[in-house]
Image 1 (spheres, rainbow, N blue to C red):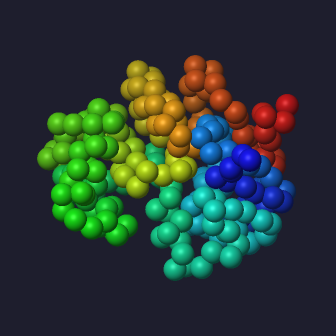
Image 2 (cartoon, rainbow, N blue to C red):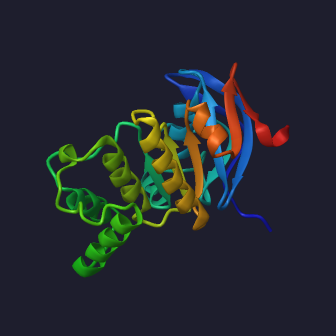
Length: 225
């Protein structure tokens, strides 16, 4: 039986008390990769925020990583997010802490115990994103591409079943964007499902996957033809 990490059925996605998407129904299988596209204001970010419970699902049915969104209490939101990796366009790194301290902050916040285990996990994810020598560097000393790799490493810390990425290459030049996409591909190949919002259609052509399109208040799915 196929296991879905996202299931939405007849969902309404809200943004500032306005419905931006209606009748949203789609599923994303474990280990799958899909893009989320659409014009600014079409509902991409609001859909992602609904999936990681930053916005409530007020109408319809939805589950993410086994958690029911309509029934999700505030106390359960951290447990959902431990199963997710979230990658933002604007990095949202702590500027007064080193790379390792940024990652340690997340491990402490998500209940990791044991200093040596935490240090080993930080070392492991930095190696995976190609930044093994950056642990003691400050974020502002890194290039945009390196900062995005730190954000991806942060998202990988808890071995997520699903990674949600909101315009992860939006501020990066084409060569760096391609290297970030290759990194996402490697992560996806290990079994992590990825839903990535993007406006970069060149990357979609270069790295083709299923495409979900927010248009005129609906979510269109390339998998349905």
